[in-house]
Image (cartoon, rainbow, N blue to C red; front, side, top):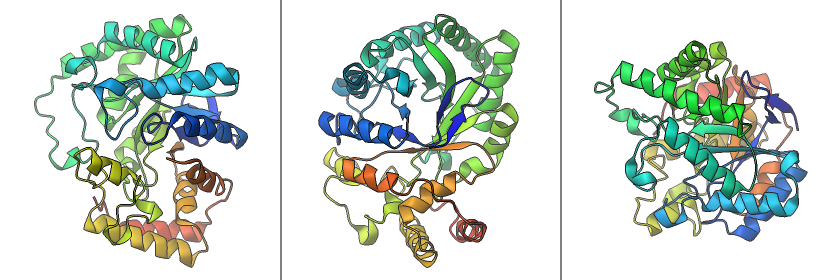
Length: 352
């Protein structure tokens, strides 16, 4: 598999990343270990996790469990030097730290805690899961209101956190830093403050991105290109919507929507499973079939055609699902199909 560099850092990773957010919940430990083995065999060496995982749902009693599972695999396999590990500190959440926002002191403690759970001496990419000032991610864009923000307080917070990240980098605990669920303004300011203070420049930004959710394509893409920041694209299959398994309103047993409903949620894939979202999915399947593609393989391959550096994060509940994803690696999207995908986007803009 092709290797790429994260932003302006020296961290080299595989061009596709394995997401682990279901490890310890929908995916039991034995299957999780099998997935990591299979990923490595396929040349996928980049694994992404977070202190709050597993998700769907997030529960106080399971915070850190996914990191522990990854840590046990690292210890048992002896393959730490063969992989790159990314993890994240949670933003303000009642589940973690009783809703306290992170600052430099908390970041330092959280890095040490993640290192213990991961059973390693270094984290290749350490990310800030949510901005403390708020975010428009996960359908919050419809009611997003930044009017209560204080620019100076935000800049002071960034300087404090970057100081902690730089100290961790100098100590060898992290190699690079990144963002998640950030805006174009936030990305630019993190870079500005890093330049002013000598803190680490952000190497990556992990935001939602798929053929059905292309909010990254404009301002964020411009900021990422000019600031030398790589997109780590989560939910590249629109939380499973693009697989087609939810067609006709179906909620398959064991699926993400099923797990959400079982925990008291709406079962709508975080607001993605809408009438317009299902219509766009049907159009995606028709387009893929017309060009001789599996719709899942096309969604992942398309990410690698973008005019900015993007690494899709793929996730699977079962080993069979991961095998299906891996089977599509290495196929290039021709220009005529890429143009057709853009036409589909114009016909089905922001369907959820």
